[in-house]
Amino acid sequence: MSTKEFKTFNMPWEKVYGYVQSVKNGNTVWISGQLGHDMDGNLTDGMENQFRQSYRNIEKLLAEYELGAGNVVEEVIYVTDMKEGFESRKITGKEFYGEECIVASTIIGVTELALPGQKVEIKIVAKS
Image (cartoon, rainbow, N blue to C red; front, side, top):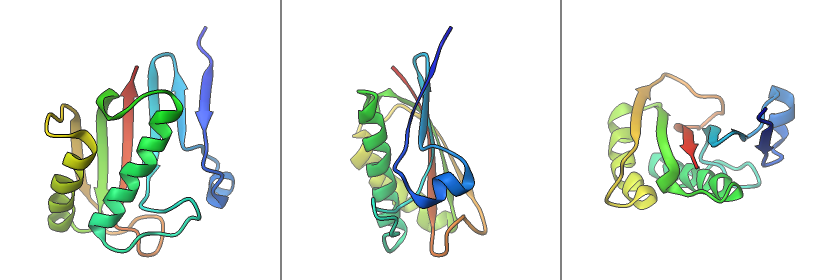
């Protein structure tokens, strides 16, 4: 029988909304949609910077399970501007995954995300 292990950033909205940042069950880790905010909850400016910070947050969570970008098998990205989001992902994706990126990826354009000023959200599935 598997047991769930979870990680949190202790952001105020986690308890209010009722979720954790990531859950591991067996050899799979599900990372909740990561925003471009720092550990104080402040969003960075601009799409590319929010992508970069979202990937930093993902990297922190993966490291908690002794995993890295190479363990990611799927990402789902939500952006408020498809053209800008696609261009930003090309740049920041290479920074996070490296040149040999092998990940199933979906990018979805939405009209709005949870926080005012939020431009991107990235959800990840990783395997150990």
